[in-house]
Amino acid sequence: MRVLKNILSQFHIYLLWLLLAALLWGWIFTFVTDTAPAKKVVVFIETDVCQDMALRLALEEDMPEGLRMIQVHPFSYAMFDESTLLNADIFIVSASKAAEYRDSFLSAASLPAAESVSPDLPAGFRIYDASTGEGGARQYIGYVSPDAPAEDYYLFFGVKSLHAASLTGKGDDAALAVAEKLLQMN
Image: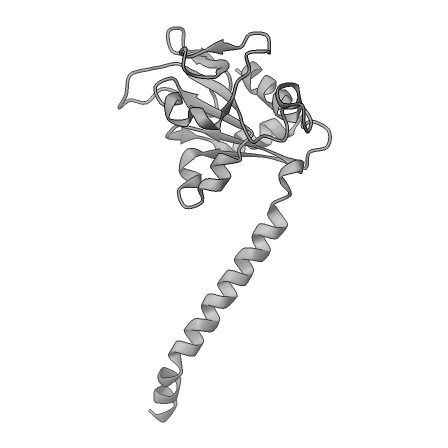
């Protein structure tokens, strides 16, 4: 009984050590499984259904030179850390939600095949055409939701991207290569 009482009296210390250990291991895991922004392309997809790990692996099969990884996330991934979303290289967004994120998009008007969703939005690329059901990476991205009407999806480049040199004049064009692969996937 005395041992149990002694353990319970020190419970708050044990709990504190447990929390510190969890934070330390979480930091180590992040350090080992992530890399600097200059060595990765980050793709965010605004959809409820996304096979992000499978899409990541498919994109990494033919990764642009100089990259260590390609990360693919649904928008819900950035629920607690908006900075990851704001610093993304590529966004795939439905036409109806594009206006919400317009300040995060870089205009691709200088690139061939770029089109404007509306006059007040930067130019992007239609990745999914709702009228035909055709689009890039359909086996990984659920463009059609049973709860909402079908709509077009567009691919935009992030305004803070380090990998869109043809549009910004800085960095490399790795995001453009990843975008091209996304647009060509069936």
